[in-house]
Image (cartoon, rainbow, N blue to C red; front, side, top):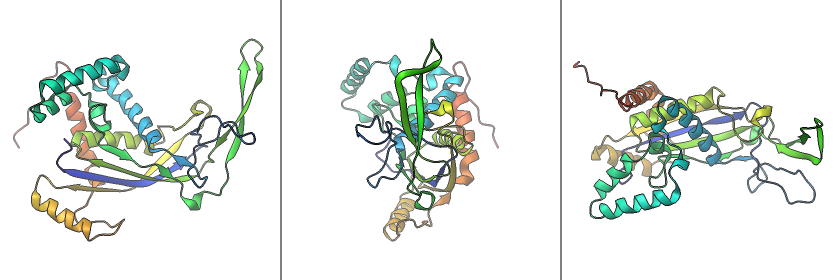
Length: 287
Protein backbone atom coordinates (compact mmCIF):
# COMPACT_ATOMS: atom_id res chain seq x y z
CA UNK A 1 0.00 0.00 0.00
CA UNK A 2 2.91 2.36 0.70
CA UNK A 3 5.77 0.58 -1.08
CA UNK A 4 5.01 2.13 -4.49
CA UNK A 5 4.41 5.83 -5.14
CA UNK A 6 1.08 6.42 -6.89
CA UNK A 7 -0.20 9.92 -6.17
CA UNK A 8 0.18 12.94 -3.93
CA UNK A 9 -2.13 15.78 -2.91
CA UNK A 10 -0.63 18.88 -1.28
CA UNK A 11 -3.09 21.21 0.46
CA UNK A 12 -2.21 24.70 1.65
CA UNK A 13 -4.36 27.37 3.18
CA UNK A 14 -5.11 29.56 6.17
CA UNK A 15 -6.96 28.70 9.37
CA UNK A 16 -8.56 31.73 11.03
CA UNK A 17 -9.88 31.85 14.59
CA UNK A 18 -13.44 33.17 14.43
CA UNK A 19 -13.72 33.14 18.21
CA UNK A 20 -10.97 32.89 20.81
CA UNK A 21 -9.08 29.58 20.81
CA UNK A 22 -7.79 27.55 23.74
CA UNK A 23 -5.63 24.50 23.16
CA UNK A 24 -4.24 23.96 26.63
CA UNK A 25 -0.66 23.03 27.42
CA UNK A 26 -1.78 21.69 30.80
CA UNK A 27 -1.77 23.31 34.22
CA UNK A 28 1.09 25.72 34.72
CA UNK A 29 3.63 25.18 37.50
CA UNK A 30 4.85 28.78 37.34
CA UNK A 31 4.26 30.81 40.52
CA UNK A 32 3.24 33.82 38.43
CA UNK A 33 1.10 33.66 35.34
CA UNK A 34 -2.06 32.04 34.08
CA UNK A 35 -3.27 28.75 35.53
CA UNK A 36 -3.93 27.19 32.11
CA UNK A 37 -1.62 28.48 29.36
CA UNK A 38 -2.08 27.64 25.69
CA UNK A 39 0.40 25.64 23.63
CA UNK A 40 3.23 27.80 22.28
CA UNK A 41 6.26 27.27 20.07
CA UNK A 42 9.87 27.93 21.13
CA UNK A 43 9.41 31.67 20.45
CA UNK A 44 6.36 31.94 22.67
CA UNK A 45 3.94 32.23 19.75
CA UNK A 46 0.67 30.31 19.61
CA UNK A 47 0.70 26.92 17.91
CA UNK A 48 -2.02 24.51 16.82
CA UNK A 49 -0.68 20.94 16.87
CA UNK A 50 -1.34 19.04 13.68
CA UNK A 51 -2.66 16.21 15.85
CA UNK A 52 -5.38 18.50 17.25
CA UNK A 53 -6.61 19.39 13.77
CA UNK A 54 -6.37 15.82 12.52
CA UNK A 55 -8.10 14.40 15.59
CA UNK A 56 -11.04 16.78 15.31
CA UNK A 57 -11.35 16.03 11.60
CA UNK A 58 -11.27 12.27 12.15
CA UNK A 59 -13.82 12.45 14.96
CA UNK A 60 -16.31 14.33 12.77
CA UNK A 61 -15.87 11.93 9.85
CA UNK A 62 -16.26 8.94 12.18
CA UNK A 63 -19.60 10.30 13.34
CA UNK A 64 -20.77 10.61 9.73
CA UNK A 65 -19.65 7.10 8.83
CA UNK A 66 -21.18 5.54 11.94
CA UNK A 67 -24.45 7.24 11.02
CA UNK A 68 -24.41 5.19 7.81
CA UNK A 69 -23.08 1.94 9.26
CA UNK A 70 -21.22 1.39 12.54
CA UNK A 71 -18.70 -0.94 10.90
CA UNK A 72 -17.37 1.92 8.74
CA UNK A 73 -15.76 3.56 11.81
CA UNK A 74 -15.37 1.07 14.62
CA UNK A 75 -14.73 2.10 18.22
CA UNK A 76 -11.12 1.18 19.11
CA UNK A 77 -12.29 0.41 22.66
CA UNK A 78 -14.31 -2.53 21.33
CA UNK A 79 -11.09 -4.29 20.35
CA UNK A 80 -8.71 -4.24 23.31
CA UNK A 81 -5.00 -3.68 22.75
CA UNK A 82 -4.00 -7.14 23.97
CA UNK A 83 -6.57 -8.92 21.81
CA UNK A 84 -5.61 -6.82 18.81
CA UNK A 85 -1.90 -7.52 19.25
CA UNK A 86 -2.51 -11.25 19.51
CA UNK A 87 -4.71 -11.22 16.42
CA UNK A 88 -2.17 -9.27 14.35
CA UNK A 89 0.65 -11.49 15.59
CA UNK A 90 -1.27 -14.60 14.51
CA UNK A 91 -1.84 -13.07 11.08
CA UNK A 92 1.86 -12.30 10.67
CA UNK A 93 2.75 -15.86 11.61
CA UNK A 94 0.14 -17.28 9.26
CA UNK A 95 1.35 -15.20 6.29
CA UNK A 96 5.02 -14.86 7.20
CA UNK A 97 6.09 -16.01 3.74
CA UNK A 98 3.62 -13.90 1.77
CA UNK A 99 3.56 -10.16 2.40
CA UNK A 100 0.82 -9.61 -0.17
CA UNK A 101 -1.57 -11.95 1.61
CA UNK A 102 -0.71 -10.41 4.99
CA UNK A 103 -1.37 -6.91 3.66
CA UNK A 104 -4.72 -7.98 2.24
CA UNK A 105 -5.74 -9.63 5.53
CA UNK A 106 -4.86 -6.46 7.45
CA UNK A 107 -6.83 -4.33 5.00
CA UNK A 108 -9.82 -6.64 5.33
CA UNK A 109 -9.88 -6.15 9.11
CA UNK A 110 -9.50 -2.38 8.85
CA UNK A 111 -12.52 -0.08 9.06
CA UNK A 112 -12.96 2.55 6.35
CA UNK A 113 -11.90 5.56 8.41
CA UNK A 114 -8.57 3.91 9.28
CA UNK A 115 -7.69 3.42 5.61
CA UNK A 116 -7.13 7.18 5.46
CA UNK A 117 -6.21 8.11 9.04
CA UNK A 118 -4.29 4.98 10.02
CA UNK A 119 -4.52 2.33 12.71
CA UNK A 120 -2.01 0.45 14.89
CA UNK A 121 -1.21 -1.80 11.91
CA UNK A 122 -1.60 0.66 9.00
CA UNK A 123 0.17 3.99 8.63
CA UNK A 124 -1.85 7.12 8.00
CA UNK A 125 -2.02 8.45 4.44
CA UNK A 126 -2.94 11.92 5.72
CA UNK A 127 -0.30 14.14 7.30
CA UNK A 128 -0.90 17.57 8.85
CA UNK A 129 1.90 19.90 9.91
CA UNK A 130 1.69 21.88 13.11
CA UNK A 131 -0.14 25.09 12.29
CA UNK A 132 2.14 28.08 12.91
CA UNK A 133 0.85 31.62 13.38
CA UNK A 134 1.04 34.14 10.54
CA UNK A 135 3.12 37.07 11.88
CA UNK A 136 0.97 39.77 10.29
CA UNK A 137 -2.04 38.63 12.33
CA UNK A 138 -0.26 38.14 15.64
CA UNK A 139 0.51 41.05 17.94
CA UNK A 140 2.23 39.23 20.80
CA UNK A 141 -0.87 39.37 22.94
CA UNK A 142 -2.89 36.65 24.65
CA UNK A 143 -6.17 37.13 26.42
CA UNK A 144 -6.80 35.83 29.91
CA UNK A 145 -10.23 34.83 31.09
CA UNK A 146 -11.58 33.78 34.44
CA UNK A 147 -13.31 30.52 35.20
CA UNK A 148 -14.99 29.20 38.29
CA UNK A 149 -16.52 25.93 39.46
CA UNK A 150 -20.12 26.26 40.63
CA UNK A 151 -21.38 24.61 43.80
CA UNK A 152 -24.49 22.76 42.63
CA UNK A 153 -26.19 23.06 46.02
CA UNK A 154 -25.77 26.80 46.56
CA UNK A 155 -25.50 27.71 42.86
CA UNK A 156 -22.63 30.00 43.78
CA UNK A 157 -18.88 29.91 43.22
CA UNK A 158 -17.29 26.98 45.04
CA UNK A 159 -14.59 27.88 47.55
CA UNK A 160 -11.08 27.76 46.15
CA UNK A 161 -12.29 26.93 42.62
CA UNK A 162 -11.53 30.21 40.88
CA UNK A 163 -9.00 29.90 38.05
CA UNK A 164 -7.93 31.74 34.93
CA UNK A 165 -7.01 30.47 31.49
CA UNK A 166 -5.28 31.82 28.43
CA UNK A 167 -6.78 32.08 24.92
CA UNK A 168 -5.56 33.07 21.48
CA UNK A 169 -7.58 36.10 20.29
CA UNK A 170 -10.13 35.90 17.50
CA UNK A 171 -8.95 36.81 13.96
CA UNK A 172 -5.55 35.19 14.50
CA UNK A 173 -4.47 33.26 11.41
CA UNK A 174 -2.40 30.10 11.12
CA UNK A 175 -0.67 28.50 8.15
CA UNK A 176 -2.24 25.20 7.12
CA UNK A 177 -0.26 22.56 5.23
CA UNK A 178 -1.28 18.93 4.69
CA UNK A 179 -0.26 16.07 2.42
CA UNK A 180 -2.04 12.91 1.29
CA UNK A 181 -0.16 10.16 -0.52
CA UNK A 182 -1.29 6.98 -2.28
CA UNK A 183 -4.96 7.67 -1.54
CA UNK A 184 -7.84 6.02 -3.35
CA UNK A 185 -10.45 8.33 -4.95
CA UNK A 186 -13.03 7.48 -2.26
CA UNK A 187 -10.52 8.27 0.50
CA UNK A 188 -9.90 11.67 -1.08
CA UNK A 189 -13.66 12.17 -1.19
CA UNK A 190 -13.85 11.45 2.54
CA UNK A 191 -11.14 14.03 3.15
CA UNK A 192 -12.94 16.62 0.99
CA UNK A 193 -16.07 16.28 3.13
CA UNK A 194 -14.06 16.70 6.31
CA UNK A 195 -12.18 19.76 5.07
CA UNK A 196 -15.47 21.28 3.91
CA UNK A 197 -16.67 21.05 7.51
CA UNK A 198 -13.73 23.24 8.53
CA UNK A 199 -14.39 25.59 5.62
CA UNK A 200 -17.95 26.12 6.87
CA UNK A 201 -16.99 26.56 10.56
CA UNK A 202 -18.63 23.28 11.58
CA UNK A 203 -15.71 21.76 13.53
CA UNK A 204 -14.44 23.65 16.60
CA UNK A 205 -10.96 23.13 18.02
CA UNK A 206 -9.57 23.02 21.54
CA UNK A 207 -11.29 23.42 24.89
CA UNK A 208 -14.14 25.60 26.07
CA UNK A 209 -16.27 24.86 23.03
CA UNK A 210 -19.47 24.82 25.05
CA UNK A 211 -18.80 28.44 26.03
CA UNK A 212 -18.18 29.55 22.45
CA UNK A 213 -14.43 29.07 22.11
CA UNK A 214 -12.66 27.30 19.28
CA UNK A 215 -14.72 28.30 16.23
CA UNK A 216 -12.33 28.32 13.26
CA UNK A 217 -12.57 28.72 9.50
CA UNK A 218 -10.32 27.06 6.93
CA UNK A 219 -9.62 28.80 3.63
CA UNK A 220 -7.89 26.52 1.15
CA UNK A 221 -5.57 28.34 -1.23
CA UNK A 222 -4.20 25.45 -3.30
CA UNK A 223 -4.73 21.75 -3.81
CA UNK A 224 -1.84 20.47 -5.92
CA UNK A 225 -2.48 17.00 -7.28
CA UNK A 226 -0.15 14.62 -9.09
CA UNK A 227 -1.11 11.12 -10.21
CA UNK A 228 1.55 9.11 -12.05
CA UNK A 229 -1.08 6.46 -12.89
CA UNK A 230 1.47 3.63 -12.55
CA UNK A 231 3.31 5.10 -15.55
CA UNK A 232 7.12 5.00 -15.06
CA UNK A 233 7.60 7.83 -17.59
CA UNK A 234 5.24 10.13 -15.67
CA UNK A 235 7.02 9.33 -12.44
CA UNK A 236 10.44 10.02 -13.98
CA UNK A 237 9.20 13.38 -15.27
CA UNK A 238 7.82 14.25 -11.84
CA UNK A 239 11.10 13.32 -10.12
CA UNK A 240 13.07 15.44 -12.58
CA UNK A 241 10.79 18.41 -11.90
CA UNK A 242 11.29 17.95 -8.15
CA UNK A 243 15.07 18.02 -8.46
CA UNK A 244 15.03 21.17 -10.59
CA UNK A 245 12.45 23.07 -8.51
CA UNK A 246 12.58 25.28 -5.45
CA UNK A 247 10.39 25.05 -2.37
CA UNK A 248 6.98 26.45 -3.18
CA UNK A 249 7.24 26.03 -6.95
CA UNK A 250 4.20 24.69 -8.78
CA UNK A 251 5.50 21.83 -10.89
CA UNK A 252 4.21 21.24 -14.44
CA UNK A 253 3.06 17.76 -13.39
CA UNK A 254 0.70 19.22 -10.78
CA UNK A 255 -2.99 19.51 -11.55
CA UNK A 256 -5.58 21.61 -9.73
CA UNK A 257 -7.04 19.20 -7.18
CA UNK A 258 -10.03 21.47 -6.63
CA UNK A 259 -11.31 20.41 -10.04
CA UNK A 260 -11.53 16.80 -8.83
CA UNK A 261 -13.45 17.40 -5.59
CA UNK A 262 -16.81 16.39 -7.06
CA UNK A 263 -15.34 13.29 -8.71
CA UNK A 264 -13.72 12.18 -5.46
CA UNK A 265 -16.89 12.83 -3.46
CA UNK A 266 -18.94 10.78 -5.89
CA UNK A 267 -16.39 7.97 -5.59
CA UNK A 268 -16.88 8.05 -1.80
CA UNK A 269 -20.69 7.87 -2.05
CA UNK A 270 -20.47 4.92 -4.44
CA UNK A 271 -17.92 3.17 -2.24
CA UNK A 272 -20.10 3.55 0.86
CA UNK A 273 -23.17 2.28 -0.99
CA UNK A 274 -21.27 -0.74 -2.26
CA UNK A 275 -20.15 -1.61 1.27
CA UNK A 276 -23.53 -1.31 2.97
CA UNK A 277 -24.71 -4.70 4.32
CA UNK A 278 -27.11 -6.51 1.99
CA UNK A 279 -26.49 -3.96 -0.72
CA UNK A 280 -25.94 -5.45 -4.18
CA UNK A 281 -22.81 -4.23 -5.97
CA UNK A 282 -23.30 -1.49 -8.52
CA UNK A 283 -23.25 -2.54 -12.15
CA UNK A 284 -21.62 -0.19 -14.62
CA UNK A 285 -23.90 1.00 -17.41
CA UNK A 286 -22.22 0.61 -20.81
CA UNK A 287 -21.59 4.03 -22.14
